[in-house]
Amino acid sequence: MGLNWKSVKAQHVTEACDALLKSADPRLKPGSLVVAYGGKQLPAKAVLRLAYCLANNIPPETQPKFASGEGTLKLLLSLGFRAERWQASDSVARKG
Image (tube, rainbow, N blue to C red; front, top):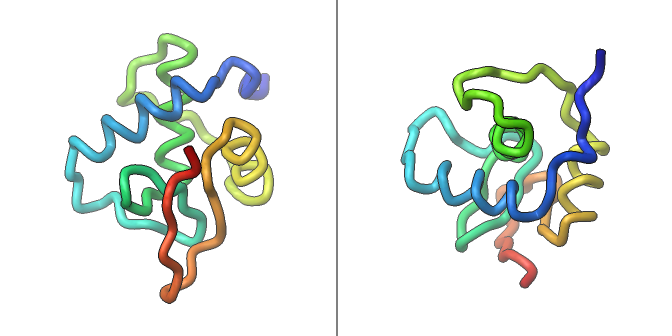
């Protein structure tokens, strides 16, 4: 059975971003897809993975499996976040 992305709301993405910023996990380096939040670029897949867990009351150590790509960007954009393919010269800020 697939993941229910309709359960993920902007609040869950915000909570996920805040948690990832607080974690300061050195493994959380932006990949090719990033979401801008708090003046930082966060890996979009990590943000959505944690947001999905928060939205569905799943323990955060659970790692829902999904392919990232255009669907990831579209979901984040539809929730009001700035998400894009990362380029070294980009300077990205959160829409607000």
